[in-house]
Length: 213
Ligand code: B12
Image (cartoon, rainbow, N blue to C red; front, side, top):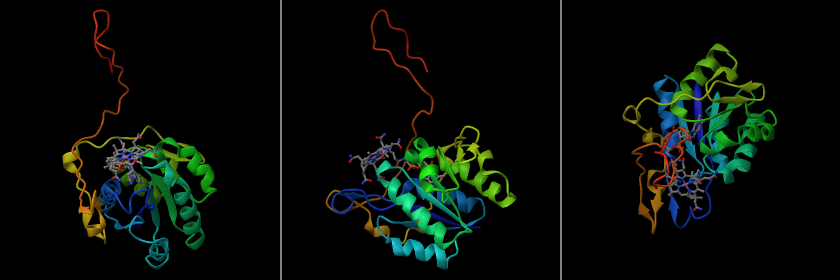
């Protein structure tokens, strides 16, 4: 399967203050490659919408995966998904990422049929299962973390250890266009992930209990 991973366009300040590589999407792309599929990555912070449509049509993507960490990118992703679906109806389009995880139903509704599913949670765990479901013709709503117009899959899974994961940095075509501050060249490294459980903390004092979680 040919899988096109897409990071949406720039937020405010990404032309003058900071523009960072799409680390989460690089990890998702690495998981696609590990699962034995062809993968390409386009970062619209540094490439144009015309480049994206070129990849969709000329590379004949079977699956298009959008990364949505910022709510500000939702309208662009919805518009691009609809336009891509019109140009290549046989492609399946899915959205994942931090913000998509919280507004999954709204993304599906605004996609008006163009967005087949939203994958909540960590992409590395879910994407191989999504690819399996697409290959076997299984219902996408059976994939852990998936939200479709027809239903919701089981709870998202977690990655086992960050040490097992390496981002597919080699897929970026504009490595030198990422910077922080006054155009200082920049790469991103992930050292840890937050606790996925709900923890309650009480202020210290004689009558307070120990933190629970
Ligand atoms: C590090 C970070 C930053 C860094 C780096 C930002 C960058 N551009 O890379 C700095 C400090 C610079 C920053 C700045 C800002 N940030 Co920030 N940032 C984060 C933080 C803490 C972690 C993001 C991250 O890199 N995670 C590590 C990578 C590996 O994980 P990931 O990208 O989430 O990807 C994983 C999953 O999301 C998923 N996934 C991702 N894409 C896809 C795609 C598919 C198809 C699938 C299946 C899965 C999937 O799988 C990946 C691997 O597990 C998040 C909060 C959080 N805990 O996620 C906020 C967060 C993303 N930031 C936020 C905001 C608001 C901002 C700013 C706009 C703040 C401001 N007002 O200036 C700026 C914008 C900067 C910019 N122009 O990009 C908000 C977004 C809110 C929203 N809902 O829109 C968040 C959610 C924090 C919050 N709760 O408020 N940020």
